[in-house]
Length: 245
Image (cartoon, rainbow, N blue to C red):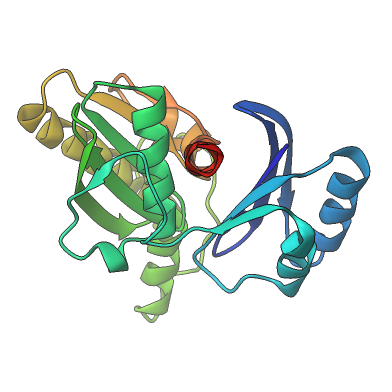
């Protein structure tokens, strides 16, 4: 069995796979991580693991994988199932590497735009020849709300709220209306832009705000909140093939 670990800026996701089948998924905080790892040990025999981190890897994870036969700490030198044409590959985030790996694995021979809506919103484009060229990075929904509060004197700090607002008829609603519809317009604009450059473009939306945004977008998309985990597992399986040859 495979253990896939995604250490993000705000939470840690752990998934157990049998080949390409997801068996169990955990979303942990630093406080609940130990309990999640104990549950995994109790219920699954883990032989292989892959860890991707955009933050510091907790000691609990490092200690847990010490005795696992194959452990991959995803980095720019890891074998990947696509051609990386990013100008500075060493600076490419491991989260974006995993998303592109998922794209070429699940949508072979297609032009694909992967949109990851989380702390930041990333846009990544990969060709039908499995060539990755890059994309874009912009602030996520909550980051925009925090920025409006931080860099002004009077605007309040608001939590992200899943409510349909037709117009900003007060300060609070104006903030929600501006941020949410601004992000939706940005995403639809990027989709239109990349569709002009890439024939028959497939669009995948993932990340923590997937459900929130998917119902607000007019474009036809594939919404998959576990896309990054699936990409990590595909990279692990890809490397295991080399090991077994």
